[in-house]
Image 1: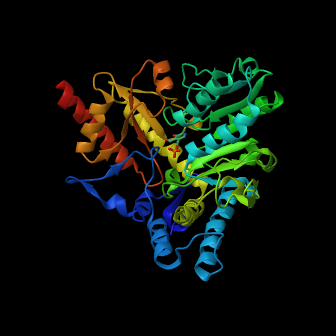
Image 2: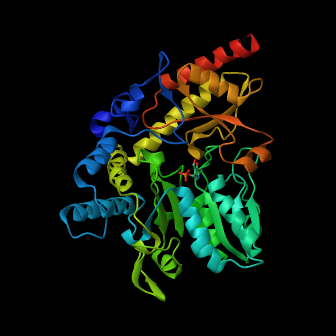
Image 3: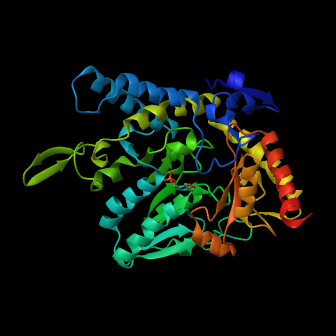
Length: 424
Ligand SMILES: Cc1ncc(COP(=O)(O)O)c(C=O)c1O
């Protein structure tokens, strides 16, 4: 499964993926929507699962199911080993960090909330500043709005420029001496923009602030090394990278996690409890109260293998090529405006667009009637939409199994939509 020798080919010194072969590993991609084959272009929302992920979870429930860290019987030992093995793989996948630094959460949203509760409520005071950007997903916005409301801290936003990139001109002022945290997305789920996280992290650290990166859209699509970025926290979700829903990751530097209070209190996260006393477990379990998503961790493992076998560099190259193709094809349509940078080196494959005459919801519904799944709406980034003067966009977002033919179908159907809605 996922062997790049068979699922990739060499071109101009690069290994490119063979998405047609990859598609065959994903049962859902042979589905039809009505009488049309499914064209799935909603990967920024969630990705599909290869056979290896589906069967690992099925096998787990058939043969191994047991709670972790508690039992002394064979099933419990096997479940615990599988659960912890995935943690090791995650640690290796994001640049070779310590396994103690990998906290299982439900998703990226919970990972960011964990920081806002456990670190934020202890360290943020009235008058402190938290720096975000104008392009954040609600997951990296609402926890900080709530924290600012509770503590009297101030929120400040790095603006975006006319090319849908961060405007770093005043970064030294925005990240002021009273800034305690800078929390930004690595890749925008709306604009596709990839942000210069190393540079922003350096400025944050030079002012004594911590640096959190929302990696929900980056870890699935490009090589990520959290140590090279020097992120203090890094959050992402398994379901956007071939894995199951209900499991995500918070990476945090050990020294910082050690100083933080737990997030969820109860079983598993303690070392000792008396009627009037409780002490916390070691990392990473201090943050993992209650029975975790064991099947999710088991399913996440083959997802990581699948991506590693293809190679994250190859995945990134495939997406650069297909994004360039998509942008070129969409640019041929006079009524369509792409909301995001055109330069593929600066962006990923979440491609937002609007048609000047057709509401994005109508477009998405029309595309669905032809078997094409895209997203339309505010993409959980209402402030960004407002900043752009929009209420919604349509968004096509690509992944390893998408082909130029998928994009041709999208563009052909967008032309049909013009005929249908605008009599062209
Ligand atoms: C940039 C970004 N951050 C955070 C999230 C939240 O991810 P989840 O819903 O898996 O917590 C998303 C989901 O779309 C996202 O695109």
